[in-house]
Amino acid sequence: MNIVEHSFYIIKDDFFKDFPDSSLVKNKKGKRPHYYCFKDNFEIIWVIPTTSQINKIDKIIDNKKKNGQQYEDLFHFLKIGHKEGVLLIANMFPLTKKYIEREYTIEGEPFKLLDRSKILKIDKKAKKILALLRKGVKFTPIQADVLKIESELKSKLNH
Image (cartoon, rainbow, N blue to C red; front, side, top):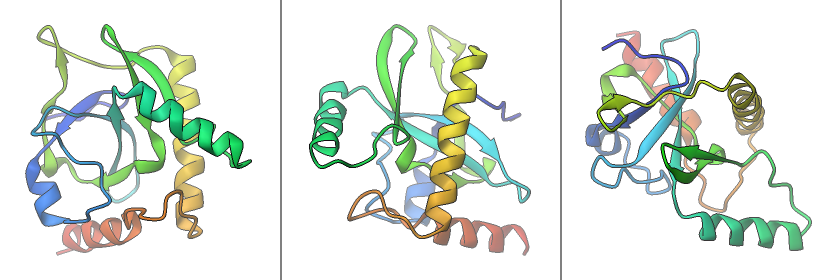
């Protein structure tokens, strides 16, 4: 399968078995789309899970505002097909294409983000969050160890 940047994919359950980090956003039995934001030099693909639980995210944002915490780069609201959704940027994680089950489709068509301004905003947020993760910043008390996953994936690619 050819992996297309800025598209949405369904992740194989095998990924969550091979990397059993309880802090990863769960797969929801193959129904949660993940947005592919970028690939690094090692064939590692960074994906961002989505949610349709807008009210839950609004509450998180309200709490962060009350506590004077930054939140703008952690989420990105957008329409995914005909539904409102949120990209959970702070919950992004790496994988390789072997863990991609299939394209996420709406009415039989692969869903891809086409709006260049949205793509640029999301990519900017994702790169900023990844840079902060690489510096050891945690966005939640139970942040997934995505750098450990990345390291293990790179190690498997080299063997």
